[in-house]
Length: 324
Image (cartoon, rainbow, N blue to C red; front, side, top):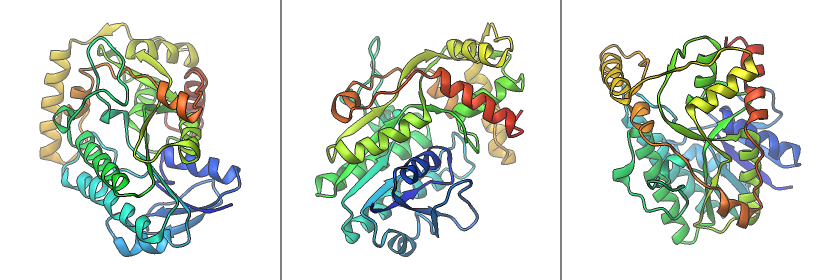
């Protein structure tokens, strides 16, 4: 089996991609910052940084496949320029290293946030969208990084782009913003909710989707990896059944949520401590991020299950690992 480089293996989605590759016989090399670690996996760990071209060249040497999963995923940062350095320039650095090394395929992990969201319809890979539609630095940096990947694909680099929706499941170390919803619910820190919606998908299915993209994806194409479109109220209802806890029944008006985001984010910018309700996240909640994965099903053979089993695993894992 080929030597395969995975970036972001110390994080939630990257860890699952690395685990699946290992299970299927790949020799996995994980690019990690010096202060990070890949837990519970037997992989070759190589130190490096997406902002350091020389370390990328060393990491990618001898690899036939690259899964670029790493990203600076934060809905607030006191220094937002860091997101652009890691997500945009880091992606450019890695793809240029892959180009020089003659890599056979790169799967670039984008985000559903880069998909257009039409009114009264499901978003798909062809929905018109521009950087002006990107709310906040995280989504904007990922959209710009996706443009870098598309540019490289047009120039001949075999890059396939996947756009995962909201992943749920076990081993959500940080946790991600979606995982934080689950943790906050388990900690009784979600007394109310806003009228928004997400497409939930099992993180294990997303990992499978990455491998399918490497096997069947067309260079320069985007593939949504998602499953169920659910309102936040529906998600909390499912969590209530799984965790045997009451679901919140109070809906917060968007105007109040926005005002809270403005105040807590301004305070965070002053103190340097993460806000209770990042304004970027509140802005993202303005739209229900409902999409279809029809293209991935048709071209890749992507067939995700429902989200309940992943929510169950997430609840059990967070409880077993002291998050709540």
